[in-house]
Image (tube, one colour):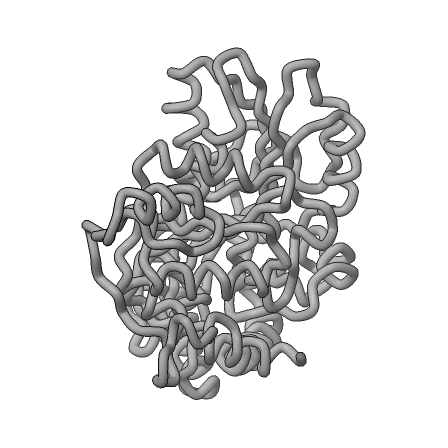
Length: 389
């Protein structure tokens, strides 16, 4: 099937839909059985979508995980209450006290906080590596996991995922990738040898800024351990959020294409502004690692960053504060456009240096008319210039 056809079809097995078009919302904590043997059989069928207890999931959950397994070409998929919990559970599933973890330096800040906080308290040491290198020289005898995020969600460096995976496999190391940017539509990590693909389904998968949900999909070798550890941690998600995200997947292709197209137009306009040093948009050659994006990923989306020639907080605040169509907020991937003054966050690195003399603005382009968004940005630069005078 072509991508759009697959997005419409996945997770619509008749056992989940009955005579309806969509899978039904099945809310449950307790599942009741007609016999002890039926209960025991359900317990044994944890990989086959058998309802056993609400935390394991209901038919709504299994419709969604079946859909994600097909999209990710995965052996199994687990659902979490948010993207961060999908990341943290995946890391905890494959790390123990005394282990060493390698994490890309451009990583999502909550991931860094978990590594430097919780994992450190439990005896796991984390080292960070330059997103533009293959970190083979940093591998130790006790390195158990390499964590990839590509592109980085603020500074947008694109990693050589194939190269990192090859180095990890040569040393018997598990690879976990935050693939939220690309989604399974534009990149399939497991197909190039990544062991676990993680998504914040809060973003493009759901697409409407009204759900908190995380997903981790694993290959055959890593799925049993990911499933067991995640269940032991007591992690589960609301079936209403799962249903809403499954509905969002149906329009993922058309949304991302439109948002990518809008973002391309806006990025081209921004590149012409004299205050802009360069764009951190993976579809532009000015973005570090652009060549890997061109090689590995089939398309971009609405998320990119703009590096300003000056890091003047007052001017940047004036630019951001007066927007009409762009809203100020974290997250991305919804239908609405967002803007974030990101200079402060971009400097939080340990393995690489960010030029703090430059300003950084991150944009998530939504489904508004791109000319309205350009007009909004044009007025923003008027405010910016007034402060710099």
